[in-house]
Image 1 (cartoon, rainbow, N blue to C red):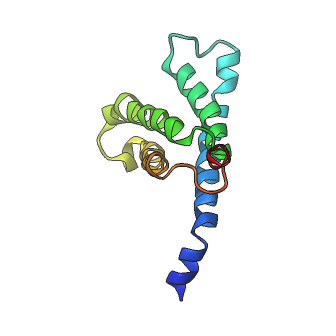
Image 2: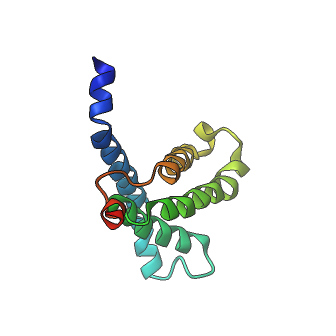
Image 3: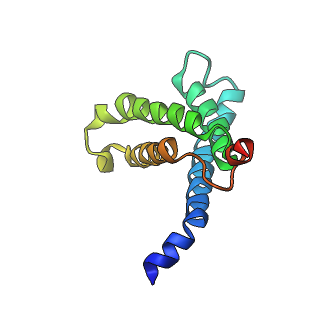
Length: 127
């Protein structure tokens, strides 16, 4: 009974998953926008690029636009965050602050392999 329900509603659940991942990723980027605008994060600062990827990428994931490509770029960014910002403080993401990066990376692997799902611009473009 539960299995049948979950199977019948999987498109809804995947839509919610994609939108929540995209929204949270967008919010992580949006927090960096003031520092980008006032020049704290210049072009030489990796946080500048992280903010751009997260803000624009989050919107694109919410919309389901070029989802596989955006998820690939975002997954690479999360690996970079882990290796550059978190692993120098230890390998345990629970103690080095890297837990969100690990969860985002894993979510982006799902989006890379599954795409945006039924309710997305990608699906509309495919027809």
